[in-house]
Length: 184
Image (tube, rainbow, N blue to C red; front, side, top):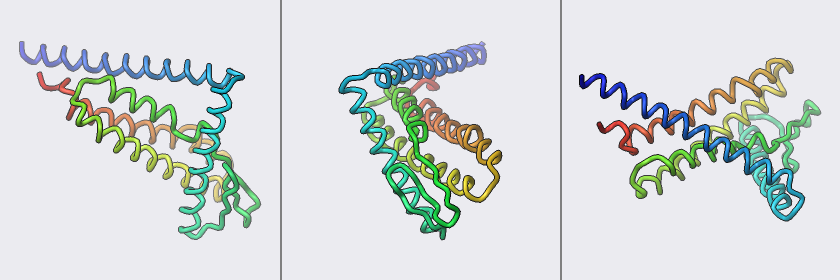
């Protein structure tokens, strides 16, 4: 009888997790749609935030590539490879904003002590930034040194799956360690 209760608790936790992810993602998409399709100050502010973050990511990505022997120049949101006359742009979908929103929203909505949330959320955001920088460096390297189809598969699928799996593991870690969902 006890194993049935545990299985029901696990199923409830899994359902809560999936529902939580879907609701947070839909709210994010709704917010992004209205900000992108608004012609007012919110839209302008959003464009500036995206460009600023893209510039920061491009700058750090270029510096890391240069540290590993690549010749790159960062120009705004672009990482330019003069030796190959190629450039790659760090656009809004490269900034891991939806992943960060899902992570933060998940931790905020799950149970757990606020003292733990106050250190876990910044740590998670730092890890997401590190994961995303690693992804951007790998994508830039792949873009310059491999054929276009290999780059496209990595850009559109492989690196995205790896990134979201790592974020998923962070959320699962929270659920198991800090949320109290598995304490029954």
